Length: 458
Image (tube, rainbow, N blue to C red; front, top):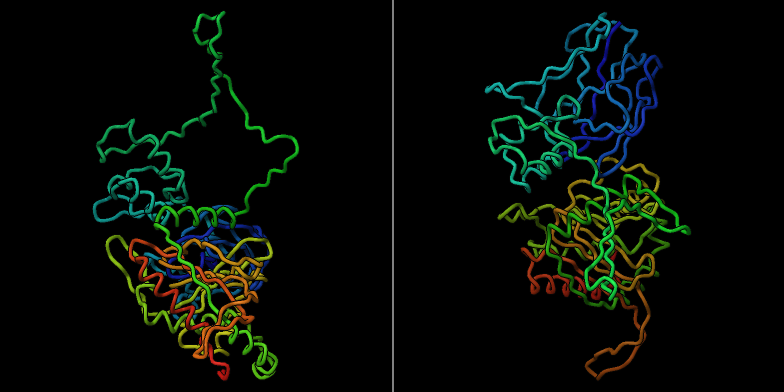
């Protein structure tokens, strides 16, 4: 017999933890190698975790809805084949973020859960894992690392959770300022809404207001309503949108583009394009093909902000906002879009869109975006004011393409013609993108759309 560790897999460079959504197996169940054991979720995508060995589930170490650091052992699998401790038979799980030693397969030793002993640093203090969310809250509240280390954690292995740090912040003013003292976290009772009803002065009261005693008031939505609890993804979207507005001062500029050449080219070539390349040509890869050419001339558009530093990205990774069947939104990323031709862009766009609709996106598919394109015209909108996808500094929205009579300027004079017109809107972070830069970039994108070559190949 041998015991194999099943660990929380690495889900991308910036992802430090994942939430267990559902266990498909329970202790005692048999499992085949590569068979799905559980479903997990990050703030990007949901994923399945397969078994790394065939055998029987010996122990499950976390419950559903637990938030687990990447690299943590989440289950034990008892295999039928004895394993020898050598380079050929040791199963190496995904490495832990903090370069923890790789877990080994222990042969012929039954699994016995052991009490957890927190790792200590050279000063004897606990060296705990802190999620990005906890670190962000600590930074915004001015909580030092020394103070953070002294906050008791109720999470797995003593981890400080969001609830722990928020409770600490709420009670921070009521405790001594000595940061070397461990501060007990007291969960406050929920504050019930108090209603104070004041009676208007009347002659009978001689102008003295009569105040009724405070009473508890329950939230009443009325009878003819349906109350719907947000699903996990909608809660994350809401959080990200609010965070983006709080982080970046948004400015939105608008322009319109005559995309007649683009429409006529696609109509002329779409059947032959699909026949030759086994994929459809939509407007999205055409937009991206134009967009990346302009972005190379405006590098500040392809950047992010870190405190007082501007991080200019050399890779042009274009996120495309995609609606899911549930009504939620996700942003898969086309990596190095400037290195792809129309065929490559079309295959990548269609592949990511299909994966999103069928819940088959991989965690890496949504990471590393440097600029986002959202097509609000898909559902008939003429224009929009998109919210920046943090930590990016700009997002472009393209509206519906509509035929309109417009003035056409020629050397022989002005005429009126029927043209395919589209509004473009660019929201940008005014901390580093000024109006002149944002408007100039948007103008040049519109020109790139308008100058689409009717004889362009792919």
